[in-house]
Image (cartoon, rainbow, N blue to C red; front, side, top):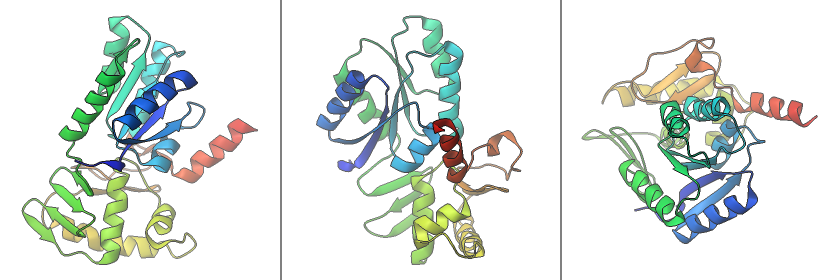
Length: 254
């Protein structure tokens, strides 16, 4: 199993005492914890912290707002999601699950139970020390080895880094400039460089199975299993690149 900083949990809670208690319990369970606020777009928090699990408090919101918040997470990522609520209504809990939450915990809840549930869902998702996994794709970062099904893929150093970044942000659309920054270390360069390497990486991945790297035209690339290419004005493509989130945050803060 992963340990220490290899197991990252993002806790989004405006209630400081709740966030502190949940964070401390998770740290005592061996997890690296990042804290976030509902005042920051959840897509931005996911991109910045790259967690393996999201724990989100939705108190203070209406049923519609809670479902919309869960939908925003699900539109951006397939990350395991735990929702915390003080609502005792079964309808509210079912609505959270229908919107895409993996678990809905009603306050007061057992912190020990939360930690055990986090551990269990990570185990089911296939997280292991130094390993990234999506379906039949396994990336062993320490060994610098990529396997798909029973095949070991022969990737260049750049292709390996590109695939690792996409897998770390699986479910999130990354722009070409974002990939330039994360893989090559700079963002002012010809984005055709990204296109060339994505094309080569795709050929190697698809020689061993269905398409995993998908193009959201006009936006960027996303790692998801078995989907069709989409246009930027279709619902699946409405995940904005990070510079758009920055502009929105600046507007809200002004």
